[in-house]
Image (cartoon, rainbow, N blue to C red):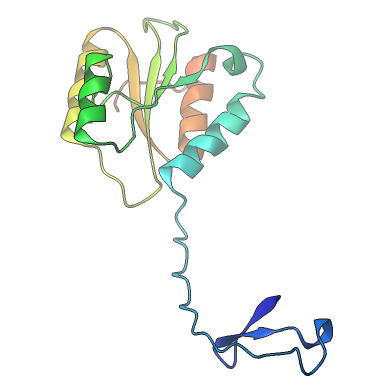
Length: 161
């Protein structure tokens, strides 16, 4: 049987046109309303938007990459990933193209609002800067896009992330 949610009555109701009156049974079932989705895109949404743009860029499409380090896992899986070299706090995005005095660009991408840089991320940012990399924290994909464009063009680019 096919059902539809009747907003006014607050229960599921079958479509009458599909069955005869004898076969038609109204199933009253309470359906909990879904929580409204946050209006702020998730970090994953931001990253997907950035890479959608980057994969159409003539230079970035061949070089930009994501470091998949944001997984939640069991203690055993976490121990295995650690043995494999996964490190907590590494920035999300890496561009291995040297520009000016920098060896490459790292970007830690955050949501537009509601995110903060963790201590392990601050540590990695400091380490990478000390090794001659440009490192930035971008709040939203549009900010990350502007950082990438400035880095590639060498315009308006200063190391103060």
